[in-house]
Amino acid sequence: MANPIEAQAPPRSELKRSITVKQLYFYVVGDVLGSGIYVLVGLVAAAVGGAFWMAFLVGVSIATITGLAYAELVTKYPQAAGASLYINKAFRSPVLTFFITICMLSANMAAVGSLAAGFVRYLADLVGLPESAIWATTGIAVAFVAVITAINLIGISESVIANVVMTFVEISGLIIVVAIGVIALVEGVGDPAVLLQFQVEGGPGSAVLAVLAGVSLAFFAMTGFENAANVAEETIDPSRAFPRALIGGMMTAGVVYVLVSMAAALAVPIDALAGNTLLEVVRADLFFIPAAVMLVVFAVIAMVAISNTALVTVVAQSRILFGMARENVVPAIFAKVHPARRSPYVALIFGGAVVAALLIIGAAIRSSQAGIPEDERLDIVDRLATITVVFLLFIYALVIVACLKLRGHDETDDTYRANTPLLIVGILGNVAVLIYTLVDDPGALFWVGGLLALGLVLYLAQRTFGAKKPDLEAAAGVAAAGPTDREV
Image 1 (cartoon, rainbow, N blue to C red):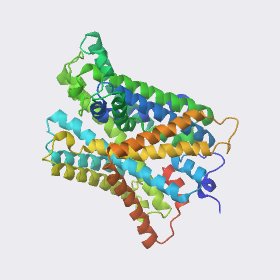
Image 2: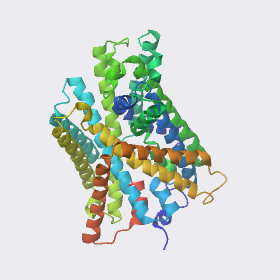
Image 3: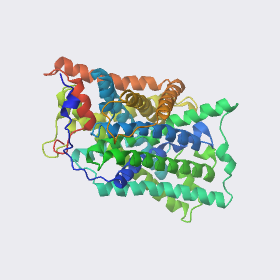
Image 4: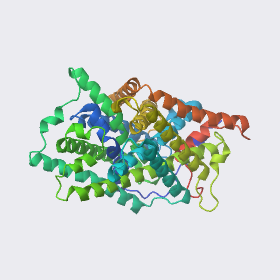
């Protein structure tokens, strides 16, 4: 029997190839240079110290090597499917491919939860809402998820122009931070020595562990590059365009992240930055615009950046669930589309409900920890970002293995070939950070297991009560690619 993913892939793309290498480069920069830095910079600083830029540098390096594997695979298979397609071709295991698809769905849900909690931190800081108001902030986070879901239910999709505008809004905030860091250095406010300081006691081994702890969070900011694979069928000469645009875009985003983290460390004491947002950098009042004005402006920029990323992520998770339902892997109700809006409303509502449940569970746990020190309580932004990273590190490592396993298959003269030793380093890097993350935060396993169990429940429900037998192979390919515009 022919593999459904291969059978459905046409020899020639049915989509118009109109994306140039320059446009693809900015697409990658916009995807990677998202809201992760706005949400997690304080947590990474708390884990590492003044040298937390090293965590971003290591995270960028591992992600870029993973990008090399994606570049090679895209030049072989320029189809809109991504990790599920590559892993299916390499291992020919429908169960493994289905598992990877569930992991991607779970990662998206956890990411939206982390972004929602990060949005609330900026809003609460702006309006003076204390962190002790756990249920109030959770209510706002749930409302944020509801609004993002409602926007997608209406069927409003991002235009290219809107995406470019949002990207420049995100970048403008990061440029402000870098400018403040330069001012701090020039005026003698910042001490360059802080960039080599670690908030740990012990020898070099402790510093390495501190950086690893930071990497497990900083990696969240580098995700998104894998989405570029989904526009492969619309790219002009993808074999030449993808390696240059993908790696160039990731390195550009990486340089910006390192500069932002250095600037933040120079502008404010690490103790003030640790666990907080980039608003602490603005509070240093070093910019030529008064801090009172800049706090509002920067908070709005950050919330726009977070909202933009959350919107895109919600679209992705609903498409994955929609595709799985369309191939009878989960209950068919998730494949329903609104007759007027043409949006997969059941998948969207379900995804929003799961994210809301994650936030409420986190709030309940935090409320029960009222009697313990603040730094020992659950940080929902940290926990959900960690869950996202756990899923993605596993997927990325497997994609690199798939890249090596597919060497010699489906190659042409235009196929890009990544450096083999670098790919091996990438596997080791992803696995090392994954293992450290789970050892450092074993509680994350319960959340990971819960999300995977939810996927299993949906599958078993369809297998028990569904009209048709689940088709794991077909679902893997279609879920990754998502529904077409005409379908939703």
